[in-house]
Image 1 (cartoon, rainbow over the protein chains, first blue to last red):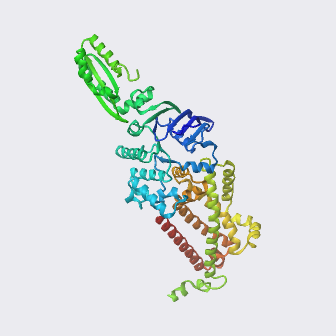
Image 2 (cartoon, each protein chain N blue to C red; image 1 turned 135 degrees about the vertical axis):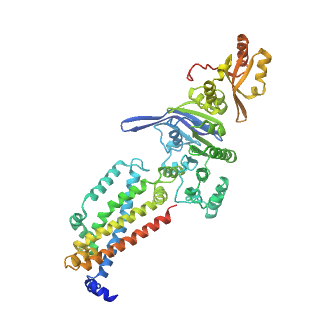
Image 3 (cartoon, one colour; image 1 turned 45 degrees about the horizontal axis):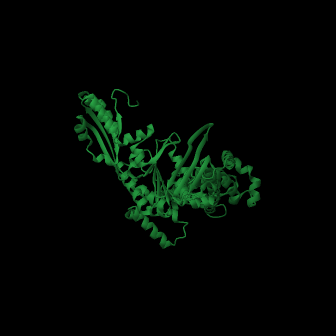
Length: 353
Length: 229
């Protein structure tokens, strides 16, 4: 009996391409489950196999091995006619929008409805409603070439929603957009998830996109799924190096450390440099003041960043601790005891160490 | 005006009406051009679509079908038209009952043009954004619907462009077919104008063909402009 809460289940998926005698394993042994109502993010650099993996969900890409279950249906067992029907339940939006240039905005959104059983007036009502939902009512009679990137993606979203799908796959849908438009499109996806209860699977190479709307995250590298978990776990306690890289880039701690190293501020500081990372309530305690009061250790804040993710606070701070050596050690031990992740930063060593 | 025509184009006037006159020849050229364009158009579009969808990255890949069509198209495109006219004589007779006259020219014209047009159609349709085709697949459209609603719709301006080009080259072929008994303006220019040294007939035949080419090019350009957004 399948879990009613599961909407997408991939099991032991392999995708292998054969090209001119060379074998490319794009996806290696990936299993993952997406629950109803999730906004599931898959992150990885280009070439990691993300696009191939999401195409397995609606079988635009047939897996070499494995099992694909969407909405309780074993996709690989369907006839081509049944598969086309099943695909109507899985909307998809694309990096390059993929709109019909020969059709107006209205025509593009109406495109998936041509074979529906709706009457003409019902169809029009539906398209008007979708136009309203993505905020393009006044653009209905324009052609895609007359729209901005963000507007084109809105048309793409409206088209993907036309068949009332339960799942929406976003294939790098914001990668060709500027940061402001990216945020708007992600907001829209988030609203749709809330309003329509639609399950969203997004793939991206930007942690910021994941951070903004996802509740669960999977990290892909080299065709494999290397880490998976809730947004908070991935952000708060990343395990793999790649995941840490993504998180550090996103929180800007990486560039801050570079800055600290190159600017020479450290030469004027004595003592130890540590990086703190805390989740949840800890942020409400005055850490810096506490260190001084308890251990007589003074802490200079070199960098700090606080974010709210899914309603929880995650903070990162880089401190220079100075004072009596033994006292500083006591302070570090104390911090370790507070459920704060503490990392010593050695400035002379390379980033990789 | 009529004085001018009588003085400078005496043979054109003498050959205007009648069974072998200009009026008949114009009609024959139009008949050969448009009837063979119609058939070559249908065959060319079907073959061109087959080439696109059966290709390795097409929506219904089929290596065998692709190879067969591809090789046939190449084969027929390689035969010089004037030789094709002679070689397929018996086949022509089988289909239209005769090898001369405008009807006799139709079969070789269609066979000579369809493969050329098929390539043009293929080139026009592979230009259709594969992303749009993928989007249509993700929406759940069948291959047949993707052909009609995506390929032919998105590729229409390019198809009209290649169609115009094909019809113009077809007019060239009708002139050649005329020379070996097909009639039309080509026949007029060669067997009357050239062989009887009636140069005014040759020149007027050429001018009439040029007018036809310009009109077709104009219509094609206009249609493309209307369709492109």
